Image 1: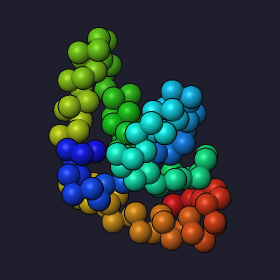
Image 2: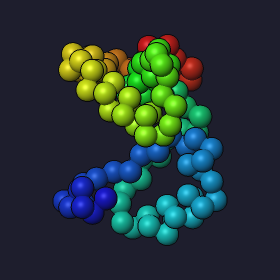
Image 3: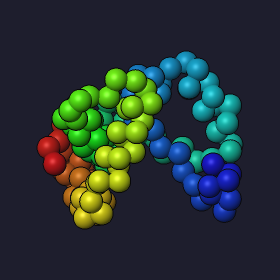
Amino acid sequence: MSIVHSDGLGQFQQDNATPHASRVATKWLQEHSSDFRHFHWSPKSPEINIFEDIRDALLHAVENRSPPPRTPMDLWTVLKDEWCELSPRCLQTLVESVPHRVAVLLCVRGGPARY
């Protein structure tokens, strides 16, 4: 965090998924709480992270590959190729969707939401 946000304005955010709320992760966050600000997110809240959509698009592209990747190196190559095939417009659309996603979550008070 100190490298990316040397101005001290960085803020750590996590989605409180089970692995992120483990004892080890929680202890680490407590021990390093003075190193950065931590954005507290409601447990099991709906996802607004656009990276989930990007991951899904890459996963879909990999699943549709013929032949499918057979080794970890094949998978890595396919993922890099598919990443390069994502259109800038697709990524821009996802970025532009964030304010709408936040507005929907505010309306449903953090409950289940469809975007």
